[in-house]
Figure 1: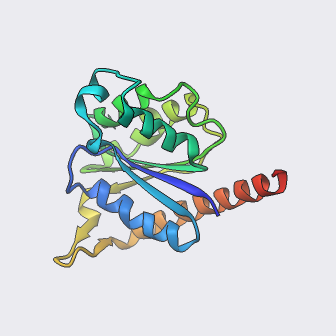
Figure 2 (figure 1 turned 45 degrees about the vertical axis):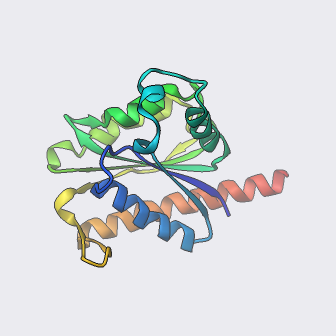
Length: 185
């Protein structure tokens, strides 16, 4: 169907955000999409923070965005905004890196006080980067995400239903985009 770039903006290797994204990657793959994970924390710090647009790792990340039909952006919320690590990457991408793409914004955080971070902090940036369609985002409380000893991720009932809905909307939007591209091709 479509190629999906799944971007984790968490600086932690064991973060709930990254685990939630990898869990959702499996759902999207089961729906027939090719999913490519990108953990921003794995990019080299010096070119990321030094704005080295020409560094091979940054160029590869930009190429992943260019080749994707859809992008899932996941971030923990810090101080009512998306992570600085994610901001560093978005700042290095071309101004219109999301042109023509369907985007699903997701956030995790410790308090419902940050639930609007998607709409007031992240969505405007994604829009300014030319996203064709930003589906309804979803905020998940940290306490609603648990991982068992065997690595199985569980999302609490209410959050799980909301995630199912936004992932379904995202997948449907991608299916429509893929159909249009195939018809035009």
